[in-house]
Image 1 (cartoon, rainbow, N blue to C red):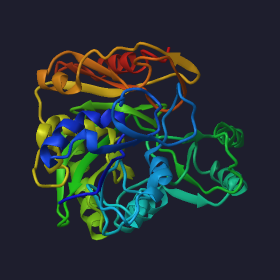
Image 2: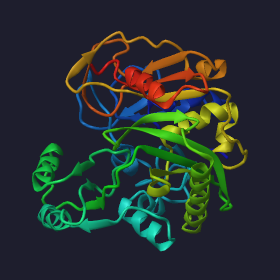
Image 3: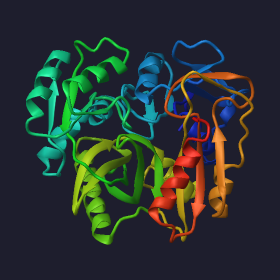
Amino acid sequence: MEFDRVVWLLDQRFDFLLSWFEKEYNIFRKDILFVGSYHGNTRNGLKKVTVGDLPCGHVSYLEPEDINKLYADRITADKKTLVVPFTGAYLPSADYVTSFIATGNIATDINNKWWQYDFFCKFAVKTPKTWRVENYFQLLDLTQTLYGQYESLLVKKAELAGGYKMKIVSSAGDVRDYCRMQKEDFLNNEFLISEYIPHKQSFSGMGIIDRRGNTIWCGATEQVLYNDLAYEGLIWPPYIDDKGLRDIKDITLKVGKRLSQYGYFGFFNVDFIQKMDEMYAVEINARFCFSTIFYACCCGEKFWKAVQGEEIYECRTDRRLILGKIKAKEGKGYFKLADQSNILEWFASGTGGFQSYFAGTDELECYDYGSFMGIFGEFLPKDTNRDDALGLFWDRCLQQYR
């Protein structure tokens, strides 16, 4: 199929997929328009558009939904466009738009946490009890009532993912602190409140829904979370018994089957928490995810076929690995950060580690706000215990944050 324009809406951590994309579709990076929020220099020499309102030399990572909202009105009917997005939310669903994942209202709805809660309840998937309020004052009133029934609650926005702008609260003071932390006018914003279920581990089940509605199981990872909320990376294979893994697979396939009936296609995952022997589904990510990076490494050059369900590939290796975000500190400047290796070379070798930066690689850049400035990975012996794997993970994750 011929296109008038190819728009790459994935952020820099996915740029390693470009060589396979060029080979598979005979579309070259010089002809692609790259859209992102970083003012960094890692895409120098390419056609790029930076959305957001930051001066050069400053870095702020925007949520993919925000990037789509800021760019969507530039995707117009006069040009047949191939979009390569992180999420299809807020992108037009039209004959002149082709995408690897569903776009339009279905993508926007499925990535809304209130829609997901209703979905889980409708199809008898165990999930934490959740309430919706329309403004800050309702939030205060409801949390005061619920504190008598639940020790702690989780406050979040319906559209945000990855633990972004969530907080565990146990008092009215915690709620007020949460709202102050957002640095926004939240008086008339919608909030969700969920019962907080204490847990020691969190997992993600990965799947792909092809355009015929078939759901393909891609495997499961263990999520590494900061303060039980903010997603920072993964461990694979996960530290979980066979029953737990079967539960994740069964629920993920069930969710995929139902999502396909709503018209969704593409990559997705389901996030879980485990309390004792019970598995709770807490979120659907109907989009590319951090775990997509790992899955892409497993698939190799077959990734673009696999992500459409044209190839079936389940993750396997005889090693354990950690893969995560390199955190940046707000207000700190970074300069001359050097990549140590390429992610594909690292994964193919099955040994050692790698790190790659998207900010501070050449000119001095001030990190204003965001979730990460690069990614890292490390292979470990399969029998590495979980505490040791987590200790190494946080050492790599926070290397630039300290």
